[in-house]
Image (cartoon, rainbow, N blue to C red; front, side, top):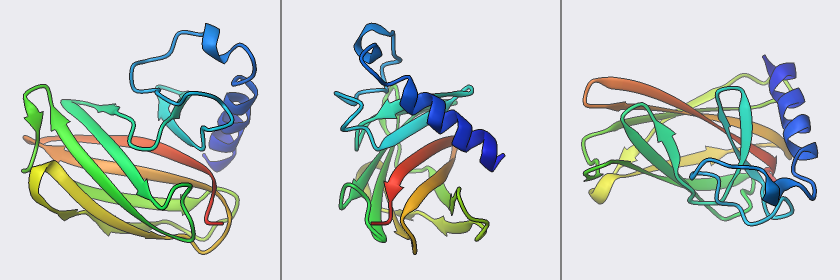
Length: 156
């Protein structure tokens, strides 16, 4: 799985050359250029550049992960906003699992600390520079969704 994700990242980065603007992208891929894109959304086997705070679809709504600082350092705080078509969802349950793809350190799982307005705060401690995979698990109205975010060059 790690090799597949790294291969997909390599292919995704190669595909972000001059033809990036000409390719159709889903609405959640809001990065303005490949040089600025250090976050990627892995959706149905494809990687899309993702702006910090960009919207990622889930089964019955969306999430917006916002990293501080950005680009993510060894210690980063993530504010994950959960919402639906009718607005932000304060009653969601959020759990984040993250791991470094280049090394088999294992995954770290952190429960999101809920705050007002659909915000969920997570602290990530990335001990090394590299490519990190973050799985955001959301339980909203009894429906469980998982979104995969890849952080390229994180943990500096």
